[in-house]
Amino acid sequence: MFDLIASVLAWFYSVFPSYGFAVAGLTLAVMVVVTPLTLKSTRSMLQMQRLQPELKAIQGKYKDDRQKMNEELMAFYQENGINPLGGCLPMLIQLPVFLVLFRVVQGITRRATDVGNQLGWSAGRLGAGADSEVSKIGGDERSFDPQNLPVDSEMFADLTGQNLEFDERPTEMVSLGLDLARSAQDVLGDNFIDSLPYLLLIAVVLVSSIYQQRQIRGRNSGAPVNPQQEMIMKILPFMLPVFSFTMPAALVVYFVISNIYRIGQQGYITRSLYRGEDSLGAMAARSREVSRADNSESKGSGGRTTPKKGQATPKRGSTPAKGADKKKGSSARKGSGSKKGGSRARNSGAGRTGNAPTRHNRSGGRTTDPGSPQHKKRKK
Image (tube, rainbow, N blue to C red; front, side, top):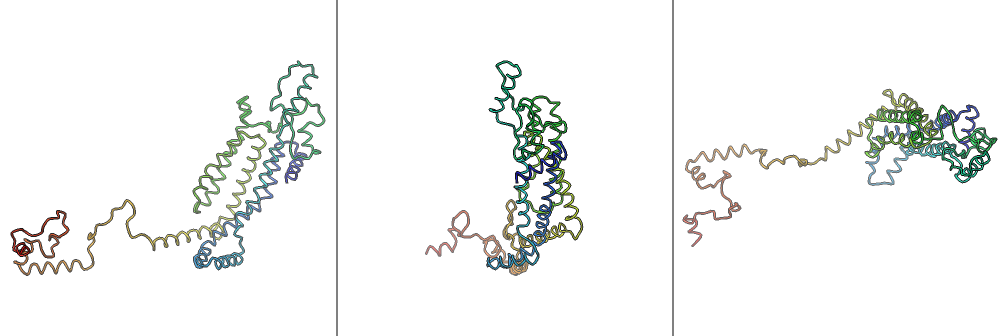
């Protein structure tokens, strides 16, 4: 795969003799090839979300019989023509392609080893009449040794300078006014003015990454998101520009082109799959609402009967029990029917007034007067 993608890069250079246009053309070609996989992955994900209530119903019906549940789920998948791995499998296929593309673009900026270049540099300087003490060759002054490119390609010949003397071989990959073999960090250390085009490319990477994330989050505002995934989505747009600052500008061109293409791709996905009441995105959103409503009802039916933490627990008796008013009224009528009995109840503390002393009072002392008849009777 490395040789295949490198051959495509070399072909673009033969058509457009510019390193920047060759990298941009290769990036666009790869993005176009993997676009059907991206669309298929998105459709499969929306199909799974649309059928989520039915899937949960099957899982709840056969939760005690896992074998039967798996059989019913497979039959449901076949009936509706969906693949449970359809959402992630295309993305896994794309990952190696983009890794190879990254390594191929990085490989064309590789320079020869220090030992061979130093010997050639010293020999060339001495042959030109320089002093015997030759300074060490710098990293940006070494000739190129590109990886994976066909050795008979025009791009390989221009990078390595096959038909030139050693000291005349190119040490820059100039395109679009930039040396694509250098990073913004290296150029900024030499001259701030010269680093402005490199910093502008990084700014484009940052803006396009943020805009792309907003596209995805805007159309999936109602979808549940894992907190860790949410954090990654917030940090990722800022990580790519940080990496771009230390990488060769050729890779930054690759990032810019791929981000711009993805913005257009996400716009197409939004219009074709999320617009309209009959679209997959709208049906998936309605299914999420149904699932959310079912979950809230199930939680409400089996909720707690005690107050939540931080809420005051109601005192016992604060809410009168059923029939309490009737009992209270009947007791009041009985007490009012006998004045003597009512006064005795009030004086002794007995009866149903609720003020009678109990054996479990806090003082722990006696409940009868030492001189009372009851006390004498107990003493005998």
